[in-house]
Each structure stands twice: as structure tokens, then as C-alpha cells.
Amino acid sequence: GENVEQHPSTLSVQEGDSAVIKCTYSDSASNYFPWYKQELGKRPQLIIDIRSNVGEKKDQRIAVTLNKTAKHFSLHITETQPEDSAVYFCAASVPNNNDMRFGAGTRLTVKP
Amino acid sequence: EAGVAQSPRYKIIEKRQSVAFWCNPISGHATLYWYQQILGQGPKLLIQFQNNGVVDDSQLPKDRFSAERLKGVDSTLKIQPAKLEDSAVYLCASSFSRNSGNTIYFGEGSWLTVV
Image 1 (tube, chains in turn purple, orange):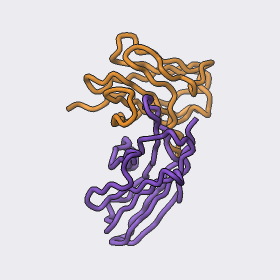
Image 2 (cartoon, one colour):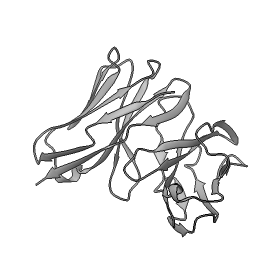
Image 3 (cartoon, one colour):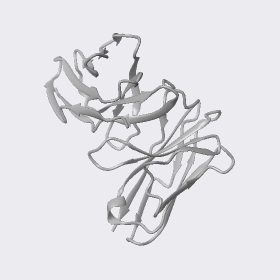
Image 4 (cartoon, helix red, strand yellow):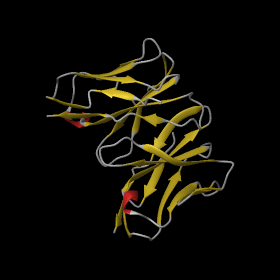
């Protein structure tokens, strides 16, 4: 089955700096890669996603890149703000089966 | 639009006792998921339903966990008997269909502590 690895497990940045979180996946058939943000005690919420036919997607300060050959994808947050502090999870799923496999998460802390 | 509803939010039980969690997905969502999230880890899929049928329960510890979605809407996850290592947040989620790329929406979770 699919295995998703995520790093780093913790990341601390100064407000205004950029943050990058990286994930690798094992199943070359995976074609959908969402990123979820989970604040303490809250539900995971989708912040951005990318499909395998696209190499990059951007939404304001958030961008995701995908390298299918290397089987890795990354989340980029620019101009970080304290409210970006949360745990971020990457995930991957294969066609015809929304069985999402999640990474272990990255705890991002943005220091004011 | 109402989100995924779960109850109870918090539960503390002793080991070997039983517990049940309830979930009401977003209206119109055919696919329902139960995830287990242990502290410090990512959500792990326990079971996936398409309408009232199970499509994937390969990671469900069937000796103690059971789940049903009898009418294709609400679902119940039961643990009996509970073990200490079952302490976790149980997240219910739903999506419009099980095709890859359908956004999965999570509930707030049911926090279980087994003592």
C-alpha cells in the first residue's frame, strides 16, 4: 500500500520568513495530493491540493509543487504569520479509491 | 452547509470497557471514513464506507473494532473491549464520492482516553 513520509517533524520560523515542508510517497499510481492544516484541538482542514497532471499550484501565500519522477511534493508558505502556526499533514491517494494515506505531520511554529 | 457531526466529543473509559462513537456526514456525501489519530501522528484510515457498504476495512482491528452504516447515512464505530493503546482521537470524515480527488471533510473528532 501507499506510504507517505513527511519532514521535518517540527519547524520554527520567524514571522515573515518562508516555510517549506516536504513529503515523499511510495505508490507511483498516486494521483492526488492534498495538504491539511490542523490547529490544536481542531479538525484537519484542507488548505491546498494538487493533482498529478499539474506540477505546481499556488493560492496566495501557499504553494505546492509536485515531482512525479522523484515521487515527492512540497508545501511552501511565504510571508508566514503567527496564525499559520499549526500541524500540517500531507496525504496521497490513488485513482478510484479515496483511501487517503497521511504523513506524520509537521508542527510549524511562527514566532512573532 | 453543515459539517460532519460527531459525538461524544470526549470519553474516558477503563480498559476492557466498551465505547461507541456516532457520526453524521455532510448531506449528500456517499463516502464515509473513520480515522484514528494517535497523538503526534497523522490520521490512519480504519474503515471506508460507500453508501452502506464497506469498501476498505483492511486496517480495522476486527477483533475489537466494529463499524456500521446501516442506512447509508449515519455511522457508528464501536470498540469492545478497549485497550490502553486505543487512546486516540477518532475522526469521522466524508466525501461526495470515493473517486480520488474528492475533498475529504473531517469532523471535530471524538477524543478517547482509556485508563
